[in-house]
Amino acid sequence: MSAEPAEGDYQLTANQLAAFKEAFEIFDKQKLGVINYSQLCALLRSVGQNPTEAEIESIVEEWDPDGIQHFDLDTFLRICESDHFKDPMKEEVLMEAFRAFDPDGRGLIRVEELRRVLQVLGEKMEGEAADVFIDFAVSKCDPGKTGEINYEVLTQELLERDPKVAYA
Image 1 (cartoon, one colour):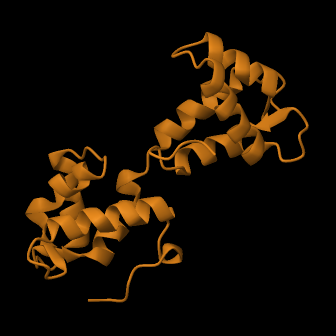
Image 2 (cartoon, one colour; image 1 turned 60 degrees about the vertical axis):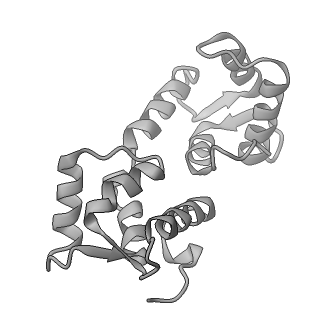
């Protein structure tokens, strides 16, 4: 098997890399360093993906052209970072939501406006939870403390963070 996967080798966050590696190791019951493609759907579901049968067939066609029927950790990580599992809609939905509060199109939302949106619209985020999120947004997207948050940067921060880890 190849060398231990490193964060810089893949277009994955450190948290994604660790989670995908752990899932692979769990599914590699015989500890051979390979998993049969018949397990790919279950493996992907274990890391939060929900591929269709057509997507699985497409992945197998792309990643197993020689028909060897199994894949190693590197191949699995390459599959996870591939376009098959990027969710551009999620990013675009977030960006559209922020644009609704940016009438002049500068790519910025005022901290006060973000707090109001969090506390009034959709699933309301109140009190300490809102404070923690605002602190996170300011620390990542308004380091100069201008009172305005670059929502494109915030969108990227939200998409890249591990949802199991509290905002910090």
